[in-house]
Amino acid sequence: MSVFIGIITFIIVLIVLVVAHELGHFITAKVRGVKVIEFGVGFPPRIWGVKRGETIYSVNALPLGGFVKLAGEEDPKVERSLASKGYGTRILVLAAGSVMNLLLPFLLLSAAFMIPHDVAKAPVMVTEILPGSQSEKAGLIAGDQLVSINGIPIDNTGVMQRNTMLNLNKKIELVIKRADSSFETIELTPMWKPPAGQGTTGLGIGYQVTQEYTYTKTSSPFLQAFSLGLKECGETLVLFKNEIIRWIIGATTPQVTGVVGMAEMTGLVAKAGISPVIEFAAFISINLGIVNLLPLPALDGGRIVFVLLEMLRRGKRVSPKTEAIIHTVGFFLLIGLMVLVTYHDIFNIINTGSAIPR
Image (tube, rainbow, N blue to C red; front, top):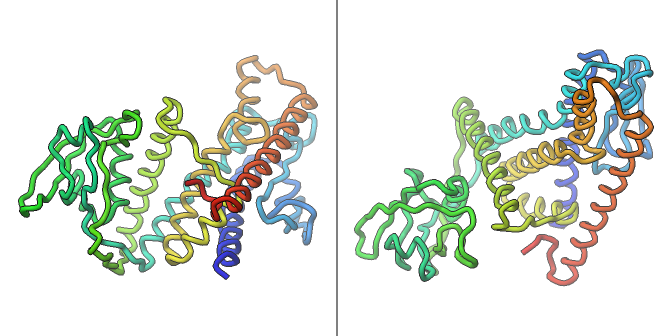
């Protein structure tokens, strides 16, 4: 039953995020005078469709996506085509979907803060100090309790981990409680690329074996929720940026999961309530926004590259036929990658019982 709930929840979340993305393209195209042939939820074959004005609005059989079909995306000879518009309009229409996905998390996270939700609290303890690490040099010892980081109370391990990753290569201030109940302030600098096996600070954290979580039901009023939503959205973008930098410098490797793994994660999150599901949807939305701006064929970012290339060549276009072929090849390569990742998810389930990378 929980697997079924996870799949259904994931499909609903994905449809909402994809519709938001395509609405960005749709609204911008309409405003800028580009002819919209079809606005589709899901991928064909078509289940239902209705034509209003010049646009067909359709619901399609495959729920893992959606599309806006614009007139002449590569061919400027088509009347009111996207390709016939100026550079600014084309870039705006192509980028609007990702912009919508990057703006939506602000609303989702604000809503998540307004909805009553449980916050876990338990003393966070230092369980291990790695020899030679900066934590050892700073004087931390196993058994210390982590009280706050940069003035933020450490109510659970997630708070410590999140704020450490937000402050890579920046000095953080830790307030700790010693075994004799005395308090001390210690400064550390989380590292982009620490020695192998040390983590960013060289300390292990956890909870006392005898300590149980306490859960506090909390919600935020309207204006405060919007302020918290904006802050959370900004911090999430910083975390994305920091993680990408760590990939580039070789400090970590990307953990890739497909729709099966995402559905499994959604099911696990759904057990915690509606607020965590909304937060997870915001996280996925940011992913979609960033990924679609990558300069790869068939993605919005790849199409923007062709517009920028035309600008650099002072109006000389790549032929519509060549561009269409490149995007088509890119599309099938992306589909192949999705199939490969899905196969990997299923392989993980068979071998470990879970599609989520460990």
